[in-house]
Length: 185
View 1 (cartoon, one colour):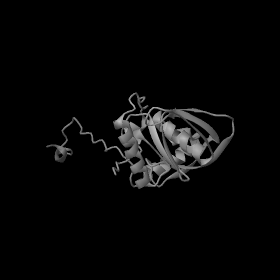
View 2: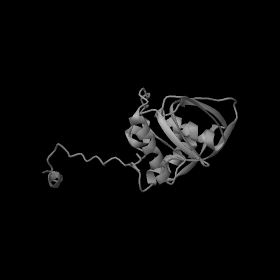
View 3: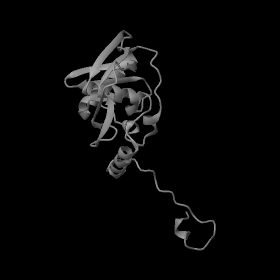
View 4: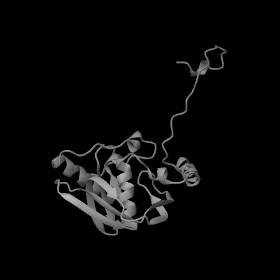
């Protein structure tokens, strides 16, 4: 069992599009096992490779007892129906925000062995498939919110104990007034 650290909001790996999987080999199957082990440890619904800092278009899911994975997914939507409800992310632990998503989705991709796979999802499964595919495109679920919801969500995210905050910038005046002498080495 290999549980890997999940990258948190603010990590550049989360906003980069992932590379297509071209080799359906032992390395890919190990990655999928590691993703499942990490997802089980975190008790989440889905986990995408970029959340582990790995640029590959693959994710795993465990939605209401249905476990699986999808490699190089594409999504289509059979109708215009939407759902609006709470959504969370292992890269933003403990936070949930109402997010609009399509109610029904058809996800097509491949298994770990390169066999074609189609998953038809509605409700929570549809939300998970969209959320994880977004990760592979470098899109976070807060990017799907309207401006007002996103502002409120960002405020909570930045206040979270785990939030990646950039180190403060300390500028030293080029004028030697003596006040900044203690900053010099």
